[in-house]
Image (cartoon, rainbow, N blue to C red; front, side, top):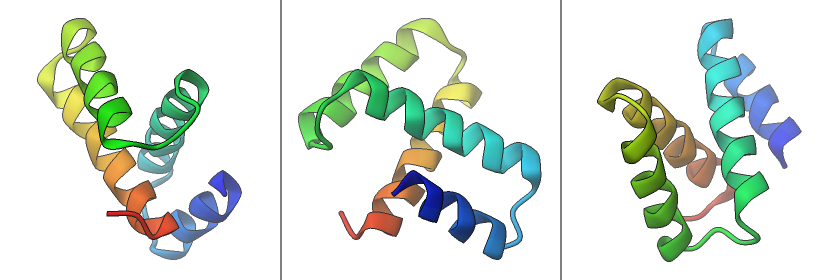
Length: 74
């Protein structure tokens, strides 16, 4: 699923650095959690807020939102 997400990002003409950052965020999330659920998304966000600056957290949340849109989840 991540490969098709990568392809979709490229087809939407995103900058390569953004694609790399989005893929990192999605892989990081998927590596930590077994499923995509509201609870896990909120836990991920809280962990990110403790460790990173707001700009980084926002980028990672944007990446996950884009991925969720790609896989058809709200």
